[in-house]
Length: 63
Image: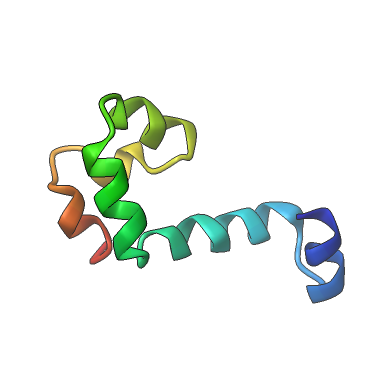
């Protein structure tokens, strides 16, 4: 992330935010998370728990 951020002239935090937001558009990834036993823990670790809280994972990408 560091080198990509440097290349794009973004901060590392901005690059991480962009990557995480792009995960919300990956249908395969969302289906995979939905099938994982501890998906809430995984969402919390990647910073998407608040987006998913109280919502079906299929709806997350609309946020």
